[in-house]
Length: 217
Length: 217
DNA sequence: CAACAAATGTCAGGGAGTTGTAAGCGGAGT
DNA sequence: ACTCCGCTTACAACTCCCTGACATTTGTTG
Image 1 (tube, each protein chain N blue to C red):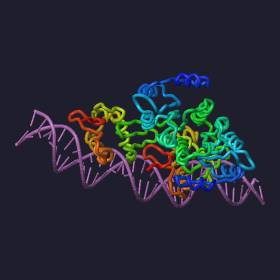
Image 2: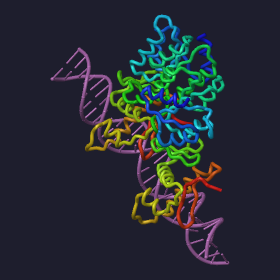
Image 3: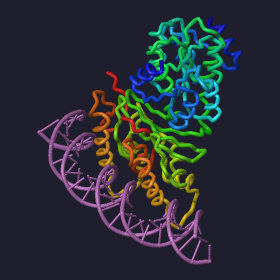
Image 4: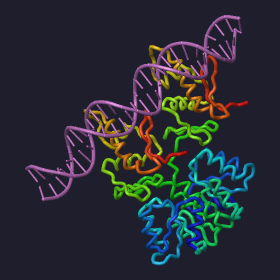
């Protein structure tokens, strides 16, 4: 039974270790700090529920899915209330097990609340200062990111060179005018932002400035 | 049916709002930002699965529990893979629904004092002040651990040198600037944290600072 | 208390990547 | 057709970051 489980879960693309007794499981948990634990309640030596409670008492950040033949509604409620994240009774379908494992792990690495700006398939994360289009990461420099961020904050509105000079470059007086610098940076930004993609988000408004928006035909 | 659900969940000590169509539900979600959404798939106007996908596409941090009469294993897998956190088929027992809701919400609010922080294969134990990657223990000095801990607490966020100076070094005025000290410590930390491993967790953001995160392709 | 080891801080050089400058080109509008 | 305005490329200067070596501090042991 355990072997079938292991090979099945491995086939799902995960790293798996097995413990055949409660004692061993408890030891392994502390050694490996797994992200998720699939727990059978009928374990020798130490009851599954006891293991569950101990892990929770130590406030270890481990997802726990109970997979067992104790499948009465009362058992389920007891398991979940003891701290399990999910409860699946035997007999079960393997795809469902994998889907539930996936759902639990999906949550595991959601870094709090990311501050996201979106325009069409463009996503800007101001926390990690990363930008991506269609889940393809754009490798932007500091200036390019600041520039894009400013345009995104003003999406749908035309942005003049004066605004950019003041709010992005933050220099109010210079020997040489900033206009060319801005143009050059726009070119560089376009090369990374729009050139590799079909829909162009960054448009020029002649005599006025630039605008970032989803083009509407 | 909906009324029975609402009063039952309210009895569990939660605040509840109902939407009777997909359209209305979508509107309410954006207005109220609930912690959890109990979703029926057979909704008029807009399919439940479509709502689910849209919420996920916007990466809103909302737990979703599907509660429906479409209860074949295939339906379950489809729902979970579309982004649901749990799936409960009708008929169901009310205590189980409450237990599952409880399990989902339990996770929502407990990031504060986690004794264990994890990023990819990196594990930080704040109790014993030990760090390990892939089960290999890292031998860190006090400052290196404090530094790594701070970065881990801010994982996915860019951390500036000013923040580090204030929160890790805790010196607000010095004869020499801390920047170089920080750089040197970063080098030393990298040597132990990233150099021996293939995936690099600690990245520099030029002109901004540093960030600890699992690298995305 | 001296001697040592480990950890942390200081300094300076080098290199990669980013940004600013200038000049030529091309296309839109008049 | 002429004139601007914006786009592009190439180059130069600079900023920022990394790193090795040395100095200082801290803590440990005989």
